Length: 574
Image 1 (tube, rainbow, N blue to C red):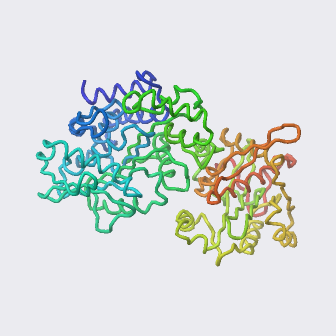
Image 2 (cartoon, one colour):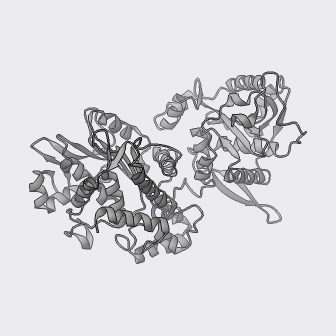
Image 3 (cartoon, rainbow, N blue to C red):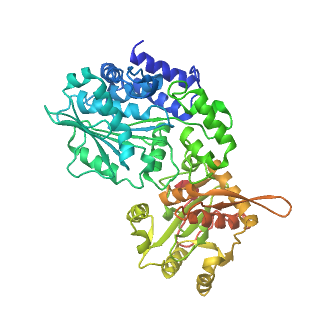
């Protein structure tokens, strides 16, 4: 069977759920459907790519000439499993019709632990460095720590050390020792493969950069430097290879969300190849079959006994459960049991929504002022005729907090206009009041809904000039539970539309659902965060606004009222 035939059979088995060792997740199915669709599209004149079976074959043959370097397989040659054939053959088979160069300049691989990620990456590093017919190739295996960078580079170094045919065929020299390998290079043209830790040099011009365990990177500086450095290369490759993570403030989570959109077809990035493995949102993790589903190398690099131990540990240990679900089911966790299904939240995104489209409409405004050195959120909520809602937000932080080294995500959102900064070390509440006055001119403010803990004195100044009511919303679980549940239902039903604000998305990903019991054993839920760095203020502000919008009387004309400045039809602008 040819590599293409193996790849196509894998696609059919995934889509039809007829794999021999497990079921397949939706992401896996979408990747296969994308490949089959593109194979059809290559015959269209306006599709700029074609599939070169021989190019894919050449790369796969190279991979299967490499030796295993660990455990019972040491010294034996690699055999690509069906999902690996699909990933490697697809990545290297697609070409541009215009010049024959590779189609994909970026790849995102997201797999659980023990799936052969490092081995695949090591093979790609060697291929890109010495077999890709690029003069003076530069390949970097990058990570946040030396030990992590070596996870990809060291196997590549050992493969060359163990395979004299490979070393002689490509004229390779090894620098360093088996305990401390430093580089692999070819004197003829100074092509090299080398580890990079922490940051890239301005002088580097990678033909390939492999970013390992990207979920551990607190910012995108390393990736950005490599992307910039590839500018002089004709067909570079940026490969991100990772498991799922815990912190949605890190840039890997944004890559994860983008990858989902590419697979779902809502984001067109033809130069990006995506392969993701895990479980689906409605899967029951307590079913061991689900654990098999998430692990494409089940029965090969991860045996049933080993996976069963992790499964039983997750069943019995609350302390380790989140880590095990994250690393073995590839389930993104956010410092605990996340409340929101972020894929459902993404489906409510409408990038074309503009706040000005709602000028003159009635609005409920939730305000969470937190404390003076923390994130302040002003969340606007508009009702729609179909029973749904639209929300926009304004967010504030003092400059000194934003400019701290560890707050690169705040700096990015400030530069993108998503975060308003005020001078000094504390948030200027006067600035928020001035913005509220401007909102009062543009909309019909039904209510200002607030948490009395931090906003009591500020609201007193608002009441001196406001012609709308200011309503204190108790923050106890028995008051917050129902609107929180309703908010979740609205999002799952696609009826809480938003413009995709990254800060709002981040805050939703930070929310942990906590449980409280009333005197009658009634369960009440409320939003919480596990660490102070994971802000949830925008969500709290939205819950407060929603709690009041749900109980306010509808006088029959609520959706058609207009202030003198606006006459737009809400449904039309959507």
